[in-house]
Length: 343
Image (cartoon, rainbow, N blue to C red; front, side, top):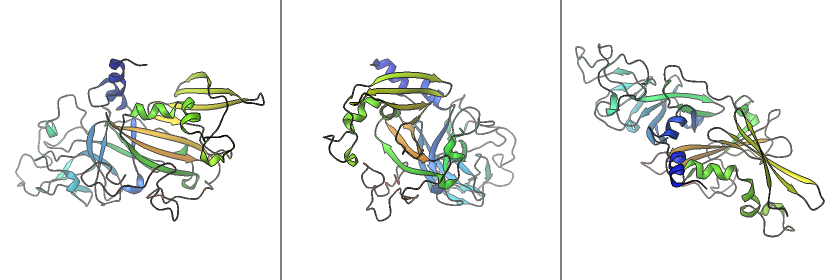
């Protein structure tokens, strides 16, 4: 068991915390690509304790900016996404996906705040020194934000210090296969920190209690079953994370192995695919210290996924009344005023 101090160290993800700074070295998966449309409405998201506005410009480029306009603090969630920029509805200041202010309609041309004026000026939004800039500041006022990218049907954000030269998005296999070889199965908001969610992903010994059927003779659809519930664990460290096998002895004397991979820092590959070679992966993006964004993806490296296709915009099966995924209740109505309001 971890001490209270160790738990604080591991689970706090805000800016300036040790784990928060570590998480900011990695791209974080946040949205499905279809959630952002060119010139479409902006969306509220929260990642690593920061409230951001996600949007896609006229050229299809995704962007993430701090929710409050650097001019007077109005929410850019209400901004107009138009003509390659997000325009604040308060005074009309318009920003591109890199945070540059490209239009100030309420400022005269001779104003020293106008785009192209000399001097970098103060940090936008009252941010402290040391906060990574969006790019080399060449205007006095900029919308503070982060790099966005797309891979494998997901929009990612990089919140680390290398905004001018970010690392590449991780090349997971599910992003390299054709689109019909993968299935994004679900997206959920958990009311717990990322480690509380992730540790269940990596724990094979809970499966045959929590997810077990009540009697072995019942159909398998009611849960799994093994007689030997006390797995012996064998752990192998790898360059990308940890692989372990849980060993159990079956009644006929054969050995049953269940393997799980932890891919640093927020991913788990559990043995939940099918016998045809379908591979699963779970994602646990930290929203803040008490909430986690959980997404699941399945893929096959060599052929299309042949299961019944869910509606990609809702995760629902055809004709299914509001059920998102197995074991998950109906979708909530849009939660106006909240981040991830449609999940």
